[in-house]
Length: 251
Image 1: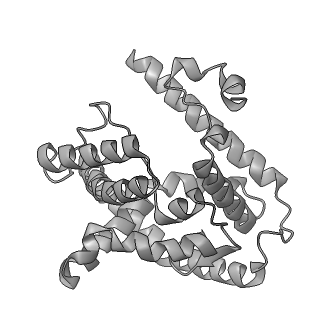
Image 2 (image 1 turned 45 degrees about the vertical axis):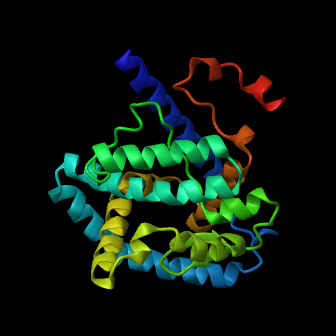
């Protein structure tokens, strides 16, 4: 049973990688209708790339090298648990009562029995992880994304999602901590997140004909998928999802 689960997860990963490569091959680098700010965005993208190459990636690589894997998992669990607060608030604002209840139960369980979130007991217990933010909440109520926008340090975004960052930060528990505590936590979160993306960025370097367009198209598609679950990839952990994609879309 465990080996079958691993095979299904590998199949999902390969499917995502295949879509990324196909997207890269389709990229021509021309200015798209949803990217009127492309010249400014490309300049900001180059700035972020340089900062990542010279600072973020070396630090993340060192972190991944010296930090034992169980501790890396614990750190990731901690910030994932804090993120469930924002997921709860946004699911509640979208009137997704079931999802909001699951978010609240995840946070309570992991905070209590998971030593403040270092251990993830909620996922094995059958409580799914949701990923919501205020940009998606605005999109849920029909607010258009607006032009694509590359933010300094934060990277890919849009006019709608950039505005949502302000609200999202307000529901992050670390925002209310003293500066001497919140700043190191923010730094650790950035390094931890970047370390988990080391393999993905290596694939990106090999696959993308135009890295800027590749990242832009991937971001816009992922946000569109998050607002329209029918376009998402099937869940290969669920046998009923295999072969049933067409009927699900047509509903």
